Length: 166
Image (cartoon, rainbow, N blue to C red):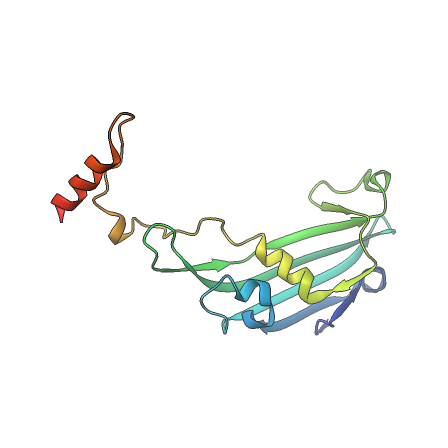
């Protein structure tokens, strides 16, 4: 049975109970994310599954789905990107605790036992947003720029060529 996501995640309690949580949000519910995107009213879906690995290591397996509108760094027009990050996190108290753990888990050392669900989801979304968002195709305003710029070629010569081509 899936339950809504509470404001605070009690890691060991949720993992020992094997909870499966899901929630629907809007990007605007995550201030650090909404500051980066052009569509703050877009929906954001979250699924979190908690369990204990090796009967003692609290883990979270999850998935987040959202569509973001960012600024293309080539043409400065809007580019829509579908994000679907999934993660498997194991929260360790020390490095020895991670021995024998499935290598698919990303380990987090000295984790807090309780933390904000909004901050946790924000972190997972932020690391999935591309650093330099661009269109998957060659942008219209990007066409016509010489592909190879010679080492000794002046940037003003290149600008002159671009101006002539228009």
